[in-house]
Image 1: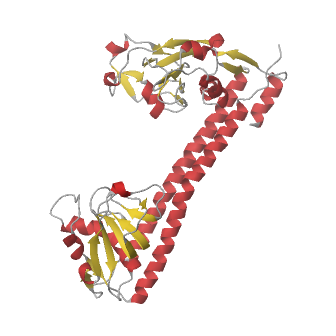
Image 2: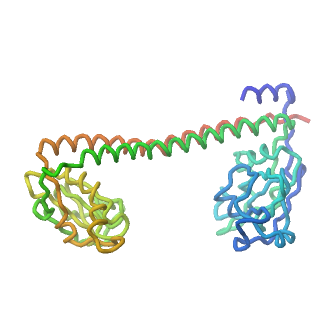
Length: 392
């Protein structure tokens, strides 16, 4: 930041000129390239949809190609050109840009413009991410369901044009911020995965018992039943949790049970893997199961931790099918439950409850940390691209 400020003070002390994009370059419509034309090798190609989903601010390699024969018929971007998306279903994605920095030319699809210009390509591409660009772009977007912007409209958007040395320095700084953000995102993603492996190790160690510990079929220590409700009975602001066949509970106006229970889906997403622990009033879908402990020698929370960790592997070793898509009551009834002393059950529950709380806190903090870093990056980008306009 300080180097950029020094350059601006030295090279443009009285301000920076602003020019229309049409005065510094020309917008060239891409040509008839469809997804079905793309291959895994050949002549480099960029489809406009890939700019939405795959590419970042700039690229020097493509993920797709076309045959050399087909490429001869299509318009091409040169190294340094900007490839600009002209079509999307939302305003934010219209006008998303990619600076092409590859050594070779690249063919471009028809729902994109090739912008051939005289500026630093990275500086220009970062400008297309800025609030300055978005605020001018939004007034020029047309269409209802499909949003579009024309080359003539893009040509009227004004951009600050500092000396090339300043443009290059800004591009380098924003490259650094972007790479740091990407590295942090990877680290934040990797940390929960590492913690999860660590958590799984401790949980499996705690829930592994010697042969001397008795195993009792679940049917002898718990009642096994289902609910009676249908998904269409859910309400937006119901007072009670409503456990359905999906992983997260909905809400409902009337409760069906008032108890301590372990809930799992009888079929659908997460079958045999996702379990909920509930205390109090709730309702239950007719194709979901409730396991209610009936033995004074078994803690419900201990059963919850144990069955959540081991039931999927139990199904894999006992089922005659390669994959289980629905559960039947006998599968639960035969499930062997270890019965260590109550004191040991309490110790295990206390440790695993603590680890669960730690994992929940980590999962909640990750999106907030990523959002904070994105806001920080956006702030510095806007500052770097804001110039006092020179008075002519």
